Image 1 (tube, helix red, strand yellow):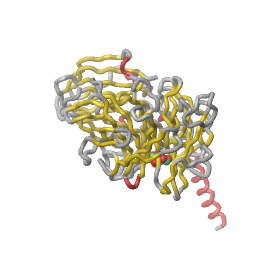
Image 2 (cartoon, rainbow, N blue to C red; image 1 turned 45 degrees about the horizontal axis):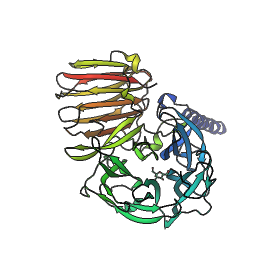
Image 3 (tube, protein in one colour; image 1 turned 120 degrees about the vertical axis):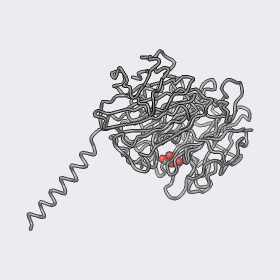
Image 4 (cartoon, rainbow, N blue to C red; image 1 turned 90 degrees about the vertical axis):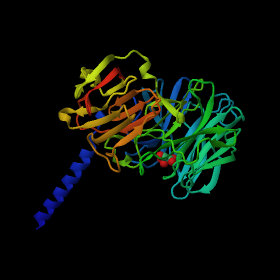
Length: 498
Ligand code: FRU
């Protein structure tokens, strides 16, 4: 009996040790090459995005101690080209409060009066989260280009005694000569706007609430002025992370309108819903502060809260999307958001151009070696005359993994099916995603593949779809198959990203 028990304990222990050791195997083949992911441990939202002295700074929600959400602090990375990222020491560690999402402002004129007036001054404004009690807006400042931060002695700078009140994002508003903060009351689906001259004292200006989609809590708002392509005009756009196009999965939406220094007014009916990305892995994006020459660009967290904890990677979990420039375009349906990959990978000479590809039933990409490092942009131009429906598939060895992007050129629809693409995560991960594009847009599709991340920009950048995948196989090939009859692809171009 005694021996039987020892044997059981031994078995149990070996199983436990075996699985925990197995779970620790690094999964570098899933690590994106040009997207930021922390060397180790957890990340969610990008924070404090800033273009400063020729470098892009990315702060991020980070658990410095583990591969799951917790100990929320600000991690820090920077890049000269938005492709190669250098991770720096943790910038703002948690203390009695978790350091939740927020932004960084370059206080060029030292209006805050904080720190050393002879040195450049960065101001971080973020939410201090006292778990289950209160969320307040706090300030920290840095005189060493964001490496180390001093928490402001008189924090909080805004406290309305609410349990959920978070994610401040700030812009400089030239016309009213003040800083404008958007900050959200998640459960009231309300974005509040505050104004300040010195970044310390804030006065409430207005509130925007319950418009568009409020099926899920609102988080991470931002307000920006975007150029309208092909004109000298601009419009104001209010972004919020909330529910996306798939009930139960988070996403982002936007509102287009005017802003007079006090109030944002949506120019569309309040029921109208416009989503930013029709994939499931783009959330909490905020614009970079101090973009040059009205170049507004952002990046988001490439993951979804519904299954984030299941991401099967080690020693990190969570990653950022590529950066994307933002503007508005006039379409037959009204003003729509247009996103363009930044850097503009496709403006350099392609590594391969193929023309007039005829696909009778199936077609295999002819130079697989070009795609073997799994980091490339593929652009398909379907030409002016609509062709039939087809599928572009990324196929693992022996076709064990299948990531499918379907295109219906006639009905101008694009869909994604990752239900057979390797490891499945929970909560709707395997369900099909779909987006329609407006018939007055070009039939060009850009597909950016970077290991576990696929980002699609189609129809002149008015359709975005971002989706993760975790294939079992290392090698893969690209194939196109027509769904009924034959199809023709006018031009295909490929750019390697490494
Ligand atoms: C959004 C969010 C924010 C919050 C942060 C906490 O993903 O929930 O609202 O500040 O993440 O990590």
